[in-house]
Image (cartoon, rainbow, N blue to C red; front, side, top):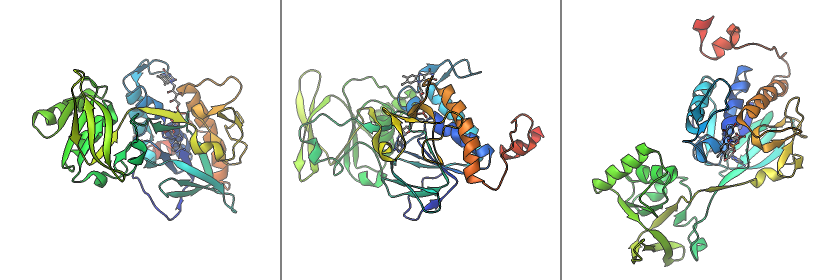
Amino acid sequence: MTDTSSLLPIQTDVVVIGAGPIGLFSVFELGLYDMKVHLIDILDRVGGQCAELYPEKPIYDIPAVPVCKGAELIDRLMEQIQPFSPTFHLSQMAEKMEKLPDGKWRVTTDRGTVLEASVVVLAAGGGSFVPKKMPLKGIEAYENKSVFYAVRKMDTFKGKHLIVAGGGDSALDWAINLQPIAASVTLIHRRNEFRAAPDSVGKMRGLVSEGRMNLKIANITAVSGENGQLSSVTLKEESGEAYEMPCDSLLGFYGLTMKLGPVADFGMAFEGEFVTVDTSCFETNLPGVFAVGDINTYAGKMKLILSGFHEAALMAKKAFTYVHPDRRYRFQYTTSSSNLHTKLGKDECK
Ligand SMILES: Cc1cc2nc3c(=O)[nH]c(=O)nc-3n(C[C@H](O)[C@H](O)[C@H](O)COP(=O)(O)OP(=O)(O)OC[C@H]3O[C@@H](n4cnc5c(N)ncnc54)[C@H](O)[C@@H]3O)c2cc1C
């Protein structure tokens, strides 16, 4: 499962936009019927809302799973789709979708990855997660030069005196991962309690006690520098004490908001912010383009994970007719089909 940024079009059967729970389960349903999938997600990890908004909260309404946390559900889905070896293009936003003369679809990301497929599945949920900007005067002048809200290339921070701001998983993961290559890493959070996974908090505190990372409990109140290059930030502690801290780069992880984004211009019919679909197969008004999960709307729609799973199964049945027009779709149970057992790597069940 690799991330491949490329200027040459990548040919595949299906492009899934969005690696939330429904995008991931779509890989399973498509895989059962021999359809290869590439997924795109703007986030640097899979899991959509479950991973970003409630990884530690229990979910009680997944059929036959009485309770499981958001992050656990995503881990299980990743295990379930592993036999189908999907390719992930993470930290990339699907920006453009166009129809090719041969009837296929071309999807281009903001990082220049171009994918061509017979079928596109929109599993874009409430839209793309967009980082909240740091509310600091004049910050725009530094953004994408020395102030960033995501890590696209770790090398950007090589040898830098880096400040990482935030207390969640992204802030701690990146502070820990960049520590070996940055000249110095200072983690800044407004309080001495962290929302990140306990394991990451433990690792961070270990690095701090070994003197390999700095931790400041403070708010950033100002940035200074020249021509987009930061030279310092001003910190204010709860006691009211304020001081400047020199730095070269600042990574801010202040949470995410959701915006429909470029998907709105892909040409599908919308009702409000949601894509309308034919509920027999979850196809949109564009032939070969489907919408499953929170992004779609229809009479009686419930924004639940189990609804999205059902939608993915019906979607795959119709997608098959585009990807394998020369073959007949044959309904099979996973319990009893030896053909499906082989695909799932469960030949011992035969
Ligand atoms: C706090 C909370 C608790 C919840 N509890 C439950 C529950 O108990 N049971 C239940 O069934 N449901 C629950 N839900 C709802 C459930 O999480 C959603 O129904 C589910 O996540 C929808 O999955 P999805 O894959 O359709 O979309 P999402 O999970 O939103 O994933 C969509 C993905 O698409 C990506 N994306 C969007 N646009 C683009 C683009 N242009 N390019 C690249 N990537 C893009 C996004 O970054 C995102 O990762 C809860 C939701 C919240 C917020």
